[in-house]
Image (cartoon, helix red, strand yellow):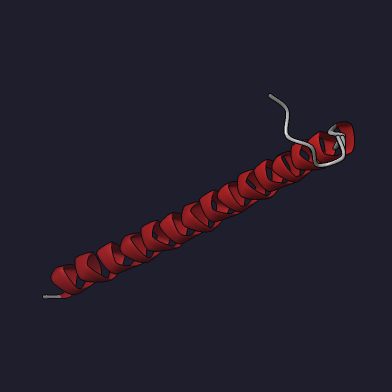
Length: 66
């Protein structure tokens, strides 16, 4: 009986360590994804800003060409 209790206790400890490791891995992966999204959004905003600053609108006086 004592050996079964010891075995169950050891398995419980191992399980807790595995769960803790999985949660730590999940949190690290979430942070990696958040960083990637942040970098992607920053690049997109930079590209949009560059496109707006390099695009000129030309007013042809509203006439119809053709």
